[in-house]
Amino acid sequence: MKRPVLIALLIGIFLQVPLAAQSKGISSAFKIARLKYSGGGDWYNDPQGEANLLTFIREQTLIQVEPGYEFVDMTSEKLFTYPFLFLTGHGNMTFSEEEVRRLRTYLENGGFLYADDDYGMDKSFRREIGKVFPGDELRELPFSYGMYHCQFEFPNGPPKTHEHDGKPPQGFGFFHNGRLVVYYTYESNPSDAWNDASVHGDSPEKREEALRFGTNIVVWALTH
Image (cartoon, rainbow, N blue to C red; front, side):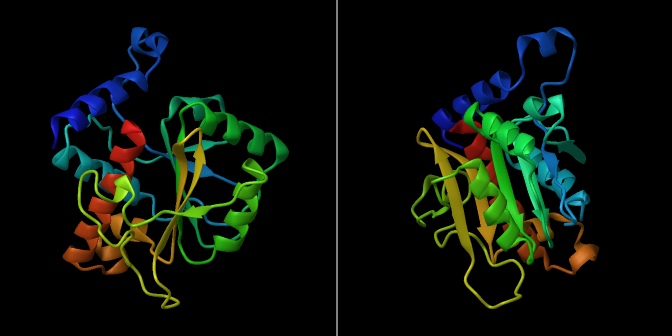
């Protein structure tokens, strides 16, 4: 790892935890929170994925992590204690007006959301995230974008982890003041391969690729 990236990582991790939280003895280790939503979609599926990704990140980087599965509601005050949110599912989702307002506030003040379409949520996700950024639209990131090269090399962008519709994998984003605040993978589904090998039957190579890709997303979110 290059020294500037390492320094930025260490500073970024420290800044994620307010001083008040440190004084109360709350862990400063990096966590991922699964974002809970309404509408009928299975936001909770495959809970082992985040724990496995965090374990991999601990093995491959100097980021202090706390492997485990946690979820958060957009109306909860805990929302603002997580620097990184993860959202996935196969079905419909809906955001209330309050949830839209709070998610936008979270993202505009340093938060990051990674959403992975598990084949079935694309239409509703685009509709609901569009409410958070009205007048804007998801933009596909070029393969040269830094996130695809910050820790591991992904010269062709998102990996094609699971085949469903035969379309090429794509990565989209929303930016706020030049910072990527929402990253969305479509026709890619790397988070499925974060799970234990027995869950989806992915090969060791596919799981390694997906975990590396997830690591890039986390590293980028923490340093930019």
